[in-house]
Length: 424
Image (tube, one colour):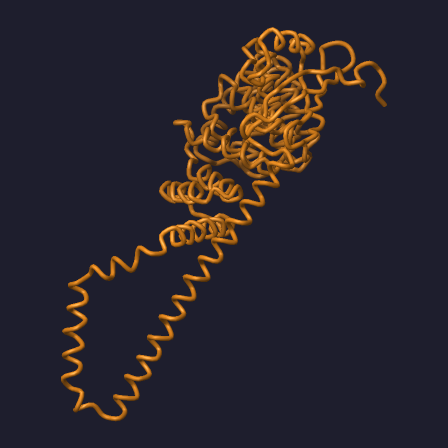
């Protein structure tokens, strides 16, 4: 590699002259071992120029230099270039290659990239698991970004309650600089859940962070604001009258004004009288319309209350709750794999000895697991999972659950019949 040209290329790159930098890096690379650093930076320059197809070729050439000690970073960048070209399967393979490099340090980047690729493919459950992993990765300096994307993935899955928790966690991260967007996303999730007062507060927080609400956010903001205002009016319908009755000074001012107007009664023309009559009729009509508007808003609020009540009953009957069945099982499996206590995921009526016996049915040293299906009921549910081991066939289990409060707790573990070889 030509060190002199490499240094010239670095200067061009630092100055933002990516076209010259790409050319100089490629010239500096030469052939054979030792070309990896220059090809790596040439690929970065091409990415800056939006020449993603050329970047893919250049990163691929850099990976051929097996003496280069940053092949993991090159593979992760290659994954990003593939995503830009909508070659998502190739992106997944590149991110996987990056994570396979033992010396690859910023693992969170490849994990987040892999999560984005899984999202693009519609593999949302896997994307959510990857974003959770990226947020928990020890070298991640900005887990808020992964948490915000986790919230977006939960929203795509229809799990708005889980999205709320993800967005709140992102907002708690001091390092996260895009809190306005996370607050707006939180407002949207809360609005969809019917938690309108919290939604309004979240949208106000987004605006306080100077985040410009797009039309979708603004529409949700207006809906939640209207509901909150209407609910306040319905809850306090009689407060206005006492306040007006107590405003003695205002009444005196009105009386004085009327006396002044009456004093020139005899000097008014017919045109003045017709004009004043029209004004009086217009004022009366406006007052009647205002009254009807209040009555209409109260009726809307009553209707909303009925709809919310019916929705809550429907949610209960169909097995919805928080924590959800899926989030409880996720917590159970992740804690079990990490060797952490799992008692908080079990129902309070299950003895500790039974918990230990039931958990023994699950392999603690699994490589991964997946939730296959959730059978929901009003009081009982079953979550079907597949556990993948380092060796041997995947194992299938039924996690039995019961409603406890508004959420779900585990009550038992059963081997699924597919684990015995009876599946298809």
